[in-house]
Image 1 (cartoon, chains in turn green, orange):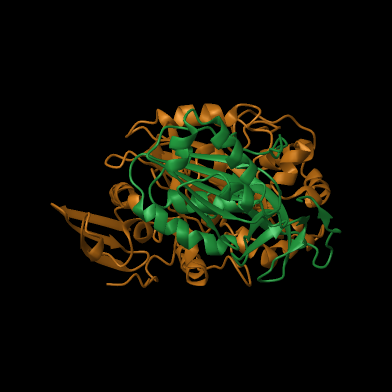
Image 2: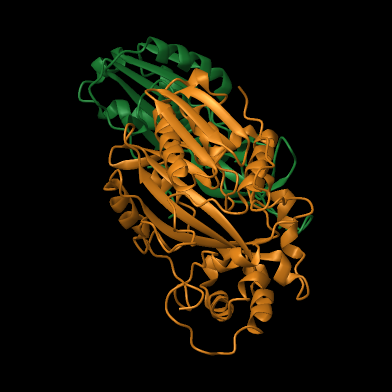
Length: 205
Length: 356
């Protein structure tokens, strides 16, 4: 099992479970990096594998650590599979699939929190409650962080503290998470003592 | 129609003062006596501490539904400046408009009833005439018709009402913070937290989750009835009389925490009290949460001997996690040193009132 373990944290921080097949007219599956393994496991658990694949639409992009398991997804034989080079190039396709989706669509998200969060945000924007979206965290734990000061989002944050990619402030990474923004919160660490920035440590890999 | 203030009336009561730059804010002697000192004993720990929001002692901040005090006009001018700098401090998700009208009605009706010398509301069906004399506003509009106001109803009324407000939608046995006017906050971001559930937006608070405080508070609030509002206190510390201690601007005001000396502490260090009141709204079934901020300088508070003794003991003995979360752990030793001069060790009487 390569599921990403979670340490004890605060209540706004998302928690994840194992993807489970549910009856549906369309199985919309969005994954990145090692999330492909969760998708393979999901299909293997389906009571009627062929029926699930015949109604499956898989969107995939490599992970922020470079992991690319496209071949394993392509080999599943789903009705539709799409490989995007990055998350931003995956999202327009997701928007179109959502616009065409009907009642009875099942949502499965797998991989890094950045991918899961952004897909969840876009699905929620169509009116789907977040509790109806399944999410399994696999692979990298790098974070998508919003600078609370300039509102800029820095992708794939590995260290704490880090420099905001927009305004350049030194930010520490909180566990406080906004589903609406699909981001953790970053707060200036040396506001009270400008220049006194602790050494960055790799907290997210 | 616009919402340009034309203050000037009642200048013998409403102070002309600032919450920024030269920080001329202070409490008049009579206003110190009515300061909502939040400690009813010599120590502090989190609790739900709700009580019915019923009219309290004459002259106190509990006398009326919404307390309007000598800082009203200047606070509203400060809010307008905050919003001009950062409009994201007031947001309302699309389904919260009706709750905004509910709140507008509650505030207008209450203020016109409680302060007829300052506010007037005349209703002819949905045709409403609102006069706010301290701010120089005289508007006629159609209730429930947004196009007849210069802002949405929530922003319109909260630009004229002291205190931050959030509106909670109730769904799935939970409360969702789906609107807010947040310009005098104790370091939390509406823009980040909007849309969160009750447990989510309280997530960063230490200790209280494990104590079950939020479980009990949510259960209590889900049963809140229209016409039976409740209230509680919260508090923190702020250097300089800065209403807008937002995380967005923390790099600007954070350094002020390093400026305290024993000489300036009495004037610069403020006890920041939140009188929080909660109202169930009649049409939307939402809950309005009013977070009214009162700032009291240490040198003002210690003019009441009981408060001087008690504040010293509370600050000295507070759990370090709370002092850290409230953002004053670095200044606690200096605060305790300054306050110790006002604590002769004499016993204090129960309750928060200055004398009894």
